[in-house]
Length: 184
Image (cartoon, rainbow, N blue to C red; front, side, top):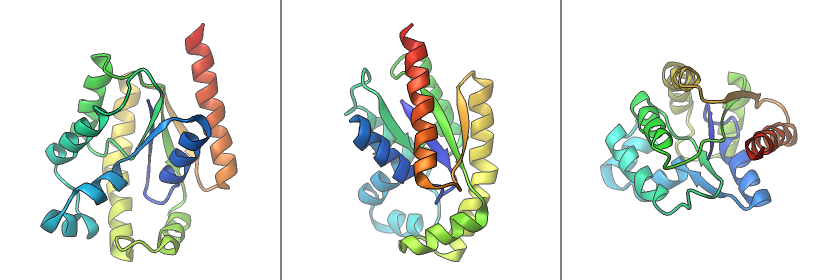
């Protein structure tokens, strides 16, 4: 399992799809899955930038991950996003349900990310929701990355403000190096 974390607009989904297409990995985009599966009032709240409960997200992700062959590499894009979700994922890894290859933290300057998000034109990409996502990244994702590092997880910071090809090559080189080292 390759986990892609980072602020919204850093290119997680683009990099995840690119890697999945190039290597035949399954790509699990938490945001896409939740936008498809969550309905009603919860969907409206989510589109307004509010987070779903940990229980809701973990329940959906657990069901989705049941469809994945744990012997095959896959990309997990945008999960976990809270301490409880990180603890759940670490439990899954520690119980050997999944093998964790690496966690990538895609970092990018706030002005670059804001411009990217506004250009992609999704309904949930408003100035207010973008500001909320930066706040969430600082308050939630950064502590998760620290928690992973403390658990001995290989966390690699990638400068995602660079051209997408450069970011892709850095991620791929790292994944190939980890795979090579795990074979021997």
